[in-house]
Length: 125
Image 1 (cartoon, one colour):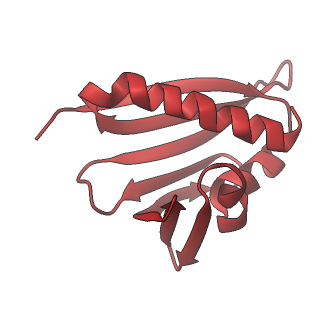
Image 2 (cartoon, helix red, strand yellow; image 1 turned 180 degrees about the horizontal axis):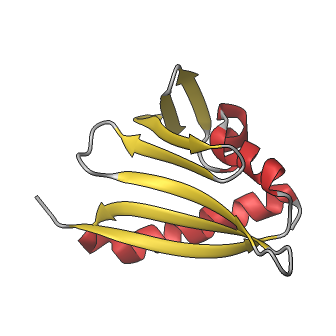
């Protein structure tokens, strides 16, 4: 079994935390940019990419601030979205934390960069 690495990426996002949170925490929001399709049953999310399915449980949620998904088939593997807003400037940032295999860290970062670019495009920022 390979070592897990925690990747932390930060992206400035020019929209309100409420709008952003909807895209990060709902099936319809996630299906717009994260996966081809997303199905939800209670806290169990099924993400579909090119016909392949992967399941994650939403294990943590703080309205307009945080959502975490733990992958069902991978021990100690999760991804988390944190929304921060600078008190002084009002700037909103999205922090992505991904706990995945160490040898895949560069590939994982590249994938997130691409996914977040899609999210920004959908949000118009």
